[in-house]
Length: 240
Image (cartoon, rainbow, N blue to C red; front, side, top):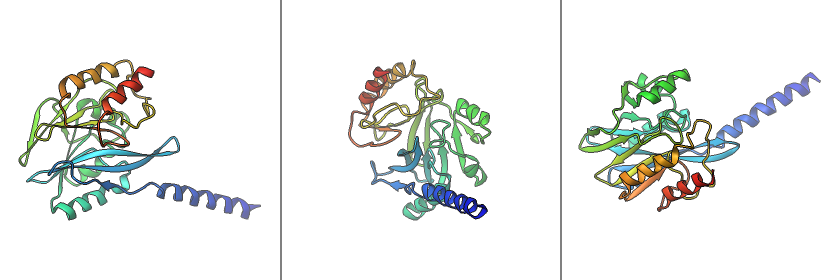
């Protein structure tokens, strides 16, 4: 009987490990602009694997990450790949909200002396979860200029979370919508445990008003190519 129990426990552990290893490695997409890249990482929610879209920007001073890999085990390997591909180090990390697929565990980057950025609200939420806050506080609406590149981190209101921000790259007319924006292929709003569904439509309306001329809007998850992501987000919100 004891052998059977031990065998069952080992089998369960191996099954868990196999499931953890089933999550795909990160993928760096072809550049969407000369210095702007989307990278996809993967995680499991509700027993199903999803992709998360994040961005990095090449500057003369180094690489700026916007959000971190979903899996902490990929933090170093992504930095190594970026260094090998572009011959530049990661010099800063900007988080678009507090969840694992965005801010993740900033202590990893803090310990390496890499500047990390998050809003005061995101840092408040990270601290409540017992996680490390960023070393720098984002001033929303302020242009950040690093190594010949420029971007603006903007808070338009609550939606997916109370702290979700977007990132605007004016030179490229690209908007990183983060998890505030759903993919055109999304079938639902995803995780809404910390969402403000009542305010979300007004936030999207402000996004459309301010960034309606964006050449590309990148949703937080799933398919990012093509258009219709904002419209799909509105459709899903109207169903609630």
